[in-house]
Image (cartoon, rainbow, N blue to C red; front, side):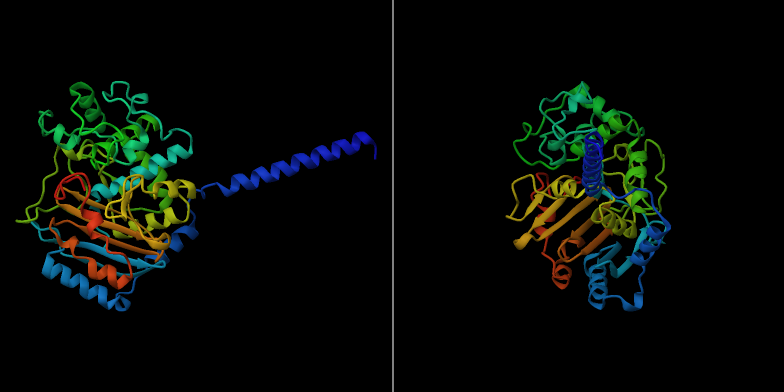
Length: 405
């Protein structure tokens, strides 16, 4: 072999070595395909299979007591290690018409929606279409506040006012729903006073995630509903999950109605059910189990992104409770991590809990506003989970009884 041929062989070998190395490196950081297969659907069916005869007796008695003594009305589920321990639909979907809840009933998720918005933002960051340091003014030049970026919105450190209260006295035609873009225009025009300067303190409020949804629409050129369907719901196998806004649907096409805490009158949807991102996603117990699975198996986000989302970015409350990128969390000893979110909006009140160490998912979706979800301590003890009641319903930076949760 000539010297020239030796050099040629060496060059090819070097090229193949680096090509293989780069391929392995890229593969290690690649999110699984969003395209679903028949095997995916079969695995999901097995995951969601439940035999009531084998349901956890303690949980069954606990839920019955929660309903009779504390007035819980809604759907609930507990799953562990990929198996449903117990599920139940209990009470009315629509008290006025005496329609009963079904296990696959779709609920307005209220602020549990924020976990989805945070996931979408992290997807766009992975794709290089957004950066945590991007200022809101980059997307909305007329935005009146300086120094508010993506990270501050995700972590509720923007200091913004709450559009839910600000717009009430300004939006004259209450029969006409607002869109996210309408709210952004109102903010640009009226320049309402902020609660605080950016990045000075944690202040939970809906404006942060309404703005994030507006940015998603601006960056992708798609309605928030379409982006979520294509990039989160369908890849996760969530066939009964939708974004519903009164700007598109004069009447939201679901059977479950939110009810007032005292008289059980149904809560009428209004112009505030137009903006989405802080709320507006409707889903079921089973689809939320599939969402947990899709997050855990890397179908939606890379591990690095999830680790960042599950990291507390504020001063911990009671030493354990914090807020990341769309998730509340409990950080215990020896790396114990529980992430969750609560929801409270127009007669709906929920809690969605994911315990990573125990591989447990706890979901309560309620459509009668009361204090029943403050009484889950015995259930958490039975499951060997931390009691998260104090962190879930206090320290939000807003009134504990507000619709911001």
